[in-house]
Length: 337
Image (tube, rainbow, N blue to C red):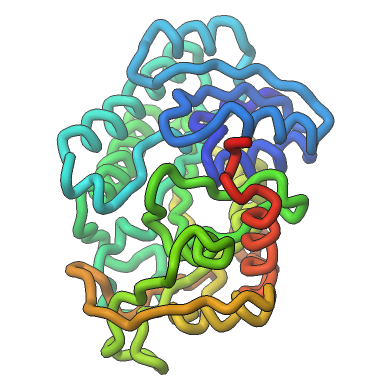
């Protein structure tokens, strides 16, 4: 069975590609490498001891997508490709709407043309916006507060309309919480361009000596230690969630959404302390002002994924920290030699 993975060289995409290959699937990857490296794909092949086809291309280029579908017998698509920075989306909303939504429309049109009607979509907990209640269920209100989150929700709605128009589609929407960690080999991990937007790669860069300290935004939240609480999930657990979703979507039709998280909320200080314990690295930090739009608590109700997909996150916060540090220690400059 051949799976097309869009954005397969990215952080979550690369770990999912490795899990797919290890589970016996054939994969075809398309990625424009705007926020990822070709080296990632080489390492996936080395770890899996298998080769796969790669297309260096963009979903906005119809010729490239046509080539992918005409030359490969694709059975299903896992769709990661898209821009993903919340702050950048606020600064350049038109760029985000054009790239994320138009790219998905092009992909869906080509899937329809080649009668490929099975898709896993990489959505986000950002579709929930500022939740009034936690844990967040899949039925919580969908009110994203930034352009990035709105592109995810718009794509979810497009895919719902697609299913309404043709009930032979099988589509799963996976709403991720906060993926961190890296593959236990230390060979693939999160390698952000420039200054990291996310907390864990920033902590990693402090640990390796690239940055002086972590700025902790907000010390007066309504949480156990005053810092923001989030649902951190190991990227390998997350990748395995895609396999469970794929197994379901291949044998069924319909469209459904699932939270992928641990169901446990950890504060920023919890994460820093766990990192220090797991790695024996001291992480200096400064408590500073809140950022606009940040919320007190955000963590998932994961019962639906457990009941319907047979999936549950199993790795601990210490596992996430230990694996993140192993990746950083082995790759002080990321994928750059």
